[in-house]
Image (cartoon, rainbow, N blue to C red; front, side, top):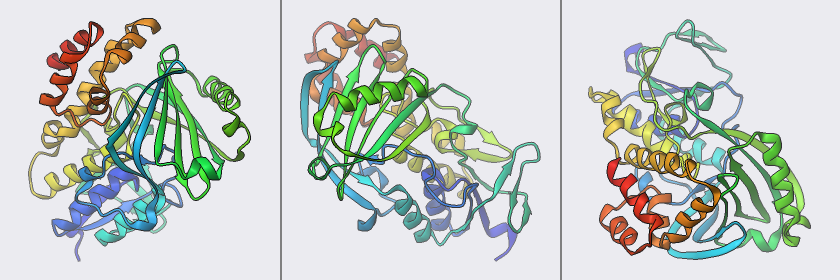
Length: 356
């Protein structure tokens, strides 16, 4: 195989894995350059609430930690609603998922390979490489928009871990939310993300854990923290490679969900590039990009409101409207019907969505 047959991918995260699949389908040899010595170094919520969007990548059974069938929502400590029949997703072992997807593509992973931005090349254990075709999926360090913090504990609690329900606790003062994700196999993930620094978020998380006896009594396993790109899309190129994944803003701004949007973006970008089409245009026109634009417009709108007004908006939405917006599916016929059922505050939200 010659140099012209290689498809270069910087970053072994979800976007890089999606790009590898698309490149392989187009007849190229994917080579993934990962700066770390293993996959999935960045901690995240590990949730994929909608698996049907990843039709191009099989999720192996041993990568599934738990199946999710419902979600329960609270706002400022008050029960809001429970959603059933909407969430049909997984909590995944992110490292195993990425490994399986990349392996299925026949791609080669070169660990400890650092991107040299000033030279537009990659320093690998075998020497320096100048990519001629490919996808840049370097993650949030290369993102130029707004980022927020998230902190989470992995806890051991056998009873909670077997639940098939996500728990979401909106905090309108923080402009963020707490979450409890059941991993199965005895572990749960409890975290918070919002518009504060990591130290303050950790203090909030400790108070949240201590407020619940079942969490406070659980064994502490691992503390994790990360930055999340919530500033919307930043499409374009990096040293001749098309940007995808978190480096291009493919994270849902209202929820922070990144695995699914990033993997989809990597696939779209690589497929377009391999087939000789404009990858930036294809990304811009994609349904996942549309979802991100709408969520970013909603986030900007909500940030201008007071905590009380934010609570009014959240309470005014029907459960189905919450699901359509949060999951980024945005079935407009359904969404407009649901918003039409909602009182006052939701009418402003409807106007925001229509203008996006």
